[in-house]
Length: 157
Length: 157
Image 1 (cartoon, rainbow over the protein chains, first blue to last red):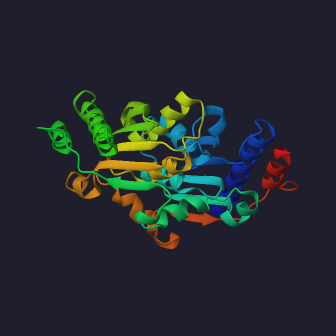
Image 2: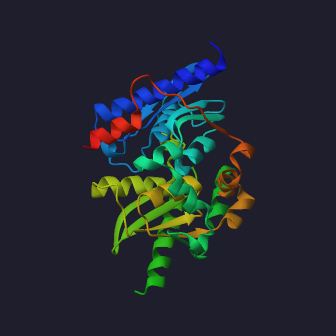
Image 3: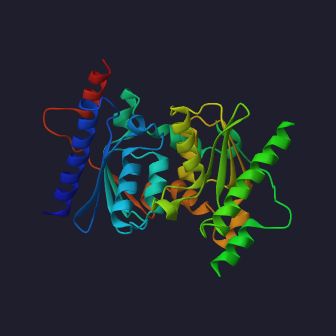
């Protein structure tokens, strides 16, 4: 198969997973497939309700499952195929894990009429900190007589 | 106690958690405490290595633990106290869960000399998609005879 045919095949699989989530588990329409070197390392769906975990988006669950399966948090060189446009949480999780490429089938524009767009998180994060909905503030608090990051450096040896 | 004293108290607790993670578990120096209405709902540390989960940052684990403890993914009105500046993954997880405020003790500038800054993820996400390290591309793939989001709408009733 060509690369484009592979992309289409895995995206269809991610949509099929999402469709099962809607029809069988009556929950969110999101699926994701994580692939490396032609091998599927994880297939996942949105499990926010199933696990009572607000972070259990499909792409996130794919990253977690693949890491467990590989016994490594390094998923360098892998590709994620997601039914929908990833939110910034999942985007960063994939980025930190070394995912190389992400393909999606449904855009934020496709999702907007159904309130299924990931746009909201991007709008928030793009705002200057002082204009965000969620307050974010630093306070230079230090325990007496010890510095956390120096302790960490020492522990590294 | 005043609000400022509370902030200091919980930030010190988050640093203490982080310090235990360094000294006892020989791993990443990050801790977080999630509080609502004066009640601590979760105390968490970075468990990336312990769980082989690249997403198991302290703030993320605090959100997940609090959701489980409350049996709700809605943490509206809560405050997170984090030892370090949150990365965009955790920031979005907290935002999506309804966290109202986030305080941190160590800034990205504090972390930079130790390679403990969360800056990298913010730089990536702020780039135009075509300039990012991680490729992100849409491909309008649809299974024949069914639309995922329409199926979701129908399932909502």
